[in-house]
Length: 159
Image 1 (cartoon, helix red, strand yellow):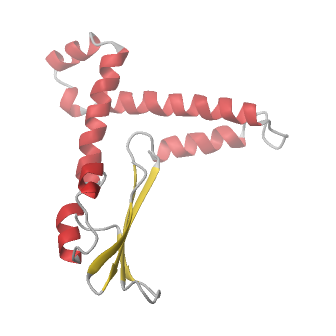
Image 2 (cartoon, rainbow, N blue to C red):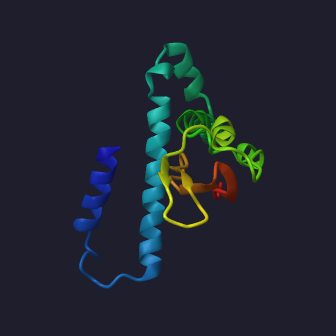
């Protein structure tokens, strides 16, 4: 992943347009190209993974269409996301009800990314659930606010 970030930075630094005025269209084209390269790299990482390195599995993958490989990649991403961020499931957020205790909320969503006391008069505790969706890398954040160990505000994540 570090190599991708380095290569992206280098491509911007040493591009012929560096230091010149950029039009929004030029930048959007460059972003589109980088996103496509990133997705291709992610697909490569999945298909070259040791799990898929046996000759039988490699042969099956070689016969798959790009759409099938993308479906496989999305399935792997969903499983990875579920392992890293179990709270990134809208059905879990729908189970939350105002008046729940902190322990009930934790039982549903799991441990928050950040938990800290609030300085607001009517909020004692904040649970912040924050992470990036895989593979879009889009930042997702949901917030729970508690007062006297009761859930009073639910800010749903933009899943």
